[in-house]
Image (cartoon, rainbow, N blue to C red; front, side, top):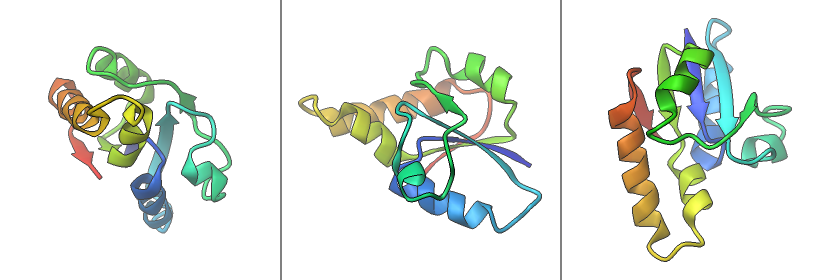
Length: 109
């Protein structure tokens, strides 16, 4: 199984630690920054793709990654929008839009 993890903050890091227990699962990690929490905690050496995922580009990026399922780390998106007023609400609505626009099943962590 191939999983695309969008964001490697707290929930994404925990998911990575659990998913690594099964060698049949391949995880591709993307984040908007080069050194998210999973890299800082040395759970992974680096992210596979440094880019922002939006409702407009989710399917284009998914064609490149070719996942069976997508996991979205809520904390990573909140981190990206935390400086905006009402940033958490905006991040949540973006997550919902990304999941709705995706042709691949999405689960928000």
